[in-house]
Length: 550
Image 1: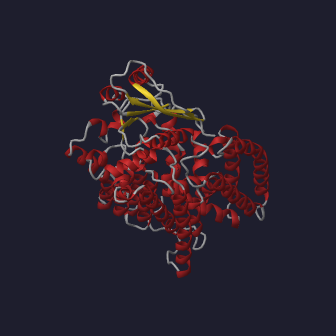
Image 2: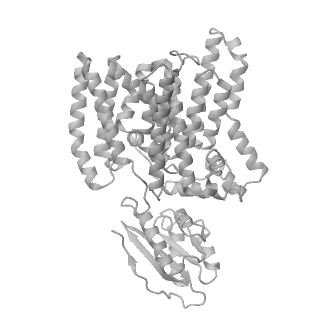
Image 3: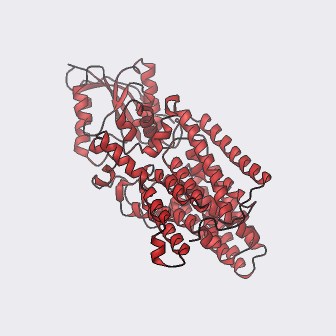
């Protein structure tokens, strides 16, 4: 790995700075507008994290809970009292910081004075990076920490770089596995500074100081959890101690190649691979972190570790670093600087297109019609890219720039297909629509102010007096609930395959001890709301109209 500060000249002209700030500002404006236009969320986790941040002011357990992720929770709790829109705006600002830092890193690794500006643009051009900028999830602050720490390290501030990176380890817990990448970079720098002598290298104070600073956030988190006597199920060590769960399944070897194409787009991912080849050792740390997280997530999901969901958004923490590599890739292709780098992009892109178009079209398509159209486009795109790869092998005068333009067009098309405001009443997530319509029914009937129990976090957000109860305590809480208490039964969390006996007992108890006051169905997802009846005869149920949103 190159020593910090290696690369091209780092003087910044006024025009260059103004262009970087302008690109950052345009992306920020788009993210803020999308966030304000939408009233929904990307996944249920958005609401779960927001509720933790909102309650953190009054509840220490909510502040330090392992699911709340202190690296996310501590800054977000400052915005949470002002509502979900304020948290969305904070995410957009954090993404803007990532975009600006990506430009600075690109300058450091020698992408070029004006070509480095592409890194700022490519941050916003990644579909899931932009999508997460309009909601509130842990991946966005993790991206800010990783990108800031990498920039500080590359400019020679090794200790401060380690300090900045460490909060990422308590924001996305699996990123702790990337700590050895920074340790390897530190060891290599110490070795070079000592002219290849082991003894002097080990006596470099910054080597040990920086390595120790990498762990300050996890150490502080564990200490705080111990000082407040955090319950075992909420402690930071719980994720490593809980039993294995197959709730999310396991993935094949190519699972995260598809997820990377979904998160960053096929075009940006292919350009990033070309940039990694072209920049070589100058961007070794950036490449190791970016590709390392893709490999790490693939291993976690392939082996079913930590009950990971295998989601594409888990790759957003390296979105800024991927943008840096992609900026190097587009420069390489446009100027025809390396046949190997160009061929790498033109081989990787068809592979990703095939994986997405044929094996997982739903990763980028939002409807069956889009998936069908995508499948028909796959053969054409692959043929064009492979022809360009063959032409590039003999001449790169026109083929390389044309391939770069084609990859940018692929990226733009994918952004257009995936990025849009997040609406609660949408045609994609049937459960969200069913929840929304069941809450609306209760509001029309004048029951929305009643106390309610639920296992779905979205209901806790939409129903003011709703309390989330765990699967094991739901039955007990329902039996002890006073008459009139509502219980939201949903087919996602109340009918999980992990404990069928307990879920059957809960459903039977709801029917015996309550009356059905609302229900909604959409796309195979169901929500039923029961009101506690007190001394009503077993099995008493009042009829309710079924709402099936189209």
